[in-house]
Image 1 (cartoon, rainbow, N blue to C red):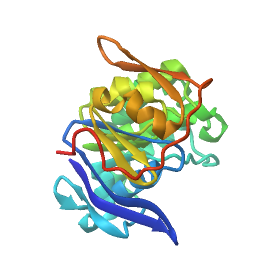
Image 2: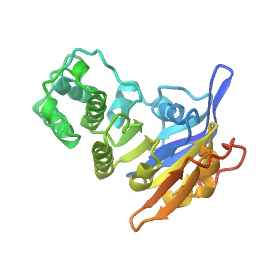
Image 3: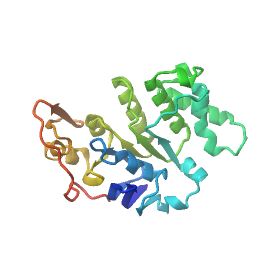
Image 4: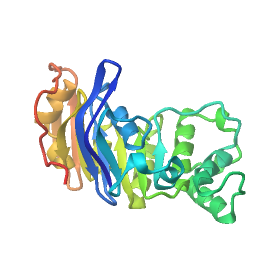
Length: 269
């Protein structure tokens, strides 16, 4: 389980997060959505310790994140950040194999099991065909899938993903998120595409102006009443048998909402 309790964070005088609480239960896929600049990526970075909250706490399976050594964190939490390294002189296979480094001592050789896990991770996101390619020379979408494969190769119980579908075509967007769901591990994912969030997330946390505005199932959160004022765009909702889908109507813009209300939907349990 991943739990954030009343987390606040500031960059200097700029308050980015204000008393945000979030809980992802064991095996649950929780999506974080919200407009640009709402604090989604900052929240995710606090969850794996890249940023230290000014107040509040983060716990992993009931253990304070701050008390977990960095090497141990890497064995428990797989991360795909928004930024992608581009000039690393490694092959795709070597980059993915780096995901096994937290499980090895310094200068210890990778094992046959490590290599098998890396190969399986590449197969899952369909980059095994470019395993020998120079990572720096492949496309942005391919780089994204390689970094996801590296996180999968870590073989952790928790996975944090910041816009994993960025640069991916439609087929690979769905393929990656299907893969993530199939892992059955505790996952928190930042997504811009609300329809992808509706299809692949068990719960959705809607963030605006650094605050949680709604927390609940896709059916509870993805309503025109919540989405229209947050994003400033008209929405028509379609209730399909397997999930909610939204159709956006940009020809009728509306004023964007600034968060001043209490969270709606279910409270984190």
